[in-house]
Length: 235
Ligand SMILES: O=S(=O)(CCO)c1ccc(-c2ccc(C3CCCC3)c([C@H]3C[C@H]3c3ccccn3)c2)cc1
Image (cartoon, rainbow, N blue to C red; front, side, top):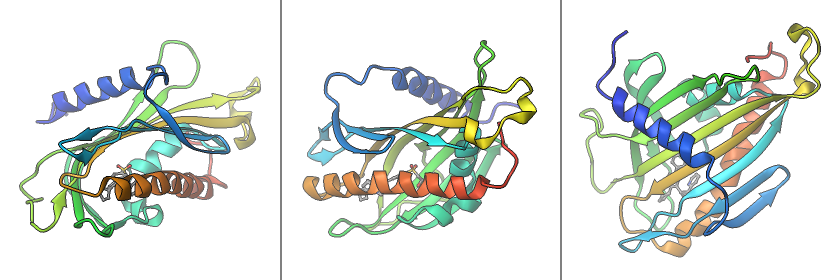
């Protein structure tokens, strides 16, 4: 199928994330939370008094592949089974089989006004030259859409989020068909640039973010482990 109207935007944002995720986690990032394999980093950034802290989470999940993590993160029909911070989510346009446009109503976080979001969501497999497993990624990026008009008092979120996954196969058996789930691990990097889109109390949003991002990733990864437990491995 030909290039859709957002194909160039999608390409640019995907390449930016691939460059950015490899950047060293050195200056300016605070490790704000650690649980098991999950490490949550944040930079404190404000634009015009609005908290827009970039957030980076590194995690390693036993027994699932990067493809499985990205599949369940991208597929809209599973979203309400793991997303606890949404009132609703729906596809408003499919640009191609890997790129859709979502409209979402986010649960209100007191004392802020309710947020909604409209973003294109793209899933992609990047096979690198070596024989090891490909990288799978999903990017959610805010985009305007005629079917998602801004309706005050709701405030439109501005989000640029990526889930970038590698699959590790420990002690690969001679025959790939013999690979078991206990031999596989997904190493993921989750990056979120979220601008609340309007004034919010900095401390409140920082506390919500510090609590909600780890919670969302814990819940989402547990969901994928459950969904894939007795299914064939999706590489
Ligand atoms: O990974 S996704 O693409 C999954 C698809 O839904 C994603 C995740 C999170 C958000 C989001 C939306 C709103 C807020 C704030 C802004 C003012 C009031 C709410 C926050 C900050 C507060 C942090 C947070 C993190 C996780 C869950 C909820 N809350 C985050 C958007 C997209």
